Structure formats: structure tokens, C-alpha cells
Length: 447
Image 1: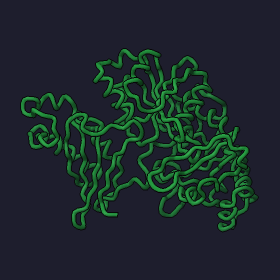
Image 2 (image 1 turned 45 degrees about the vertical axis):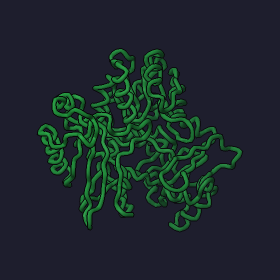
Image 3 (image 1 turned 90 degrees about the horizontal axis):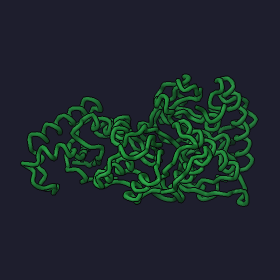
Image 4 (image 1 turned 90 degrees about the vertical axis):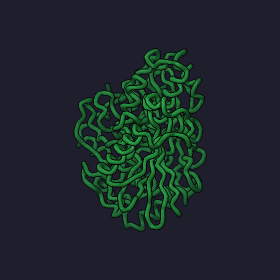
């Protein structure tokens, strides 16, 4: 089931549409945004040079720092009186990145999110519990308008209030949940504490995004919540959620709405375009946005693209699940390590839970990595005769059962990722849960 015909255009039809929209976006930003006029001129390119989508390689890149340097409204391509919505990403340092929408942009956003929900198998018969945060974060309102566009009943829960989320699921008969994958697992933990069985809840599908997650975590979520877990992707700089999503038929790569958001994969170091199938940094051009189109925006996300037609019938290119961010990559003793790789290895072990923290420190000139991960309640029960407290300091790290688990994880990380690491096993519920984006890495190395 598709939302509209653009999702199944032939590749030549799609390329023609992309070329027209890219040319129009180039003209808009060159005429209206001083930053882009300067950037185009520095590259020696004019909007009239863009005659085909392949000409995109002639255009300059846009980086997150460019948004911050032009804070707050320097990249707007519409006058203030045409701006009907302003969002901003929280960011971890410095000023937030600000994004703007006019009325046409809001309509576009609703339409691409309607595609996302349709991709996930949602219809007007569904009750959508939206646990993405509302406010400056784009997740909540983006999902909200998309769900309304398909005619579903929307519960605007926002994040947090975990026990109330579960009560509403039960009482309102929610069939679709929208939240981060880490919050989905937290909902499960709280439901267990409340002695509620997810078999009694009507949820059938979840749309999860806003943080990297693995296929192993997908299996955990699907098994525990008894649902289909659909990966969705977006970023506020481009539009918010709605850039791409998995289809429920295949769950094999995320269909990019590339009639509106043109994707490229580049070598992060050189900026060179890479062919389909190559892993690299995802670059997106928002060709249909009016208030704030971005040209060749470097997302920092690491993935690859697959142009083959999907079994669901969609012809749009599919992006592989995000492996991590270029700026999230840790370099430990010369080895590139993404948190998602560590998570994938951890979840191979049935003795640990999907709750972990990676701590990086420096001893002398050498970097050390320690992974703190919770054991399951089953492991705790087996150790009950020996471990009489859940106090972390008294947790029996040298018990034979725990040593076996630690050694197996250490071996798997070494074999699969290629780095030596310490493993600290901790009792269930020891690691702080997140009601939004989970914090997975603590880097204690000197800056």
C-alpha cells in the first residue's frame, strides 16, 4: 500500500522530476540567501548550470556549522511574514540549529510523514500514541500531522510520563506507538514492574527513530512488545521525521522520499561522491522546501544506498540502517568503533540486557574502553544464592557465571570490532533509563 504515485515512479521519471526541482531550489537559494550566493560564486557555479540532477556535484556542501554561523535566521529563503513555524535542534554545544517552514513546507511535511505511516502499515483505523517530544524538537509535531493526514486517531502524549503512557495504551487501545527505540524498551521495563503483560495491549507496530539502533535491538523490541518495529529517519535541518522509512513488507532498508530529498553518499574525508552500495556519509538536498531549502547538507550519518526496486513496489532508493555518525565514531588504539557496533555484539548474548554505557578514558598515552552492561534478571536469579545484594560495589564480578559472560563478550568485541575492552556487568535497572534519546557514550579523555 502506497500513499501516492511518486513513490513508484520509474528511475528515469524520478530523475527528470529531481532535475527540475534541484534547478528550482538552486535558483531560490542563490537569489534569496546571501550565504548561498557567496558559496555558489566561490565554486564558480550559477543556478543556470544546473540542467540535470547529475549536476548536483557542481554545488557546494552545507555543514551544520553553517547553520550555527548564520544563527538564527540567516538561511531563511522567505520573509518573516511567510514563516509559520520555527523549530530548533537542541544540540550539545553552542547555539541550536534553527529551521523554518512556510505553509507549503508544513503541507509537504504532513505528506511525507503520511508516506511514513503508510509504509509502516498504518491506516485511518489506527490509534497512534505519539510519544515523541513536542516543542522545538521536530519529532512530535512531524509525526502528529502525518498521522492525522492518513486519518488515524492521534494521542499527543509527548515523551515521559511512562506509567501514564502504559495506562493510556491500555485504556485507549493504542495500536501504533511512536518514540525512540530506547524509550520503547523502557516502556517494557516499567510495564513489567506494573505487572502488565504486553499480550493484553493492542499495539501492533512501532515507528522508532531519533537515535541509532541495531537489528539486534529491533528483535528485542519486537519480542518484548509483541509488535513490528519500523525504523524511520529524519533530521530537523532537512524537514524533521519523514526523510525515509522502512516498509512493513520488507523491513530491508529505509525508502528515501527522494522526489523531495535527494540523497548522495560521499567520502567524508575527500567529499567525493561514492557509487550505490558504498558506505559513506549521507548528504541530502531538500529540493522542495521553500522557507529553508538546504543544498548538499552533510548529515554526518554513515550509511549506503540501494536503488533496487523493493518487494513492496516502491522504486525510491533505500538507505541502509544508520551505522552511526561520523562525529560519534570513537577511535580506540587506532580502531574505528561505532556505539552501534558495540550494541550489536552485546545483544548477541542472551545473558545481558540492551542497556549499556561505553566509557572511554586515557591511561598514559593509551585509550581504554569499558562497557558497562546490565545482566538479565534470569542471570540475577541464578546468582541469588551467592549475590545477596544489588548494590553495585558488592556485585560479585568474579563469580564464575559472570566471568564466563564477560569473557565471551570481550572475545566477540575483539573478534568482530577488533578492539580490546573491559566489561563491567551490573545488576538490572542499574543504568539510568532515557525517556528521549539515550546517551550511550561517556568520553573522559582530555580534550
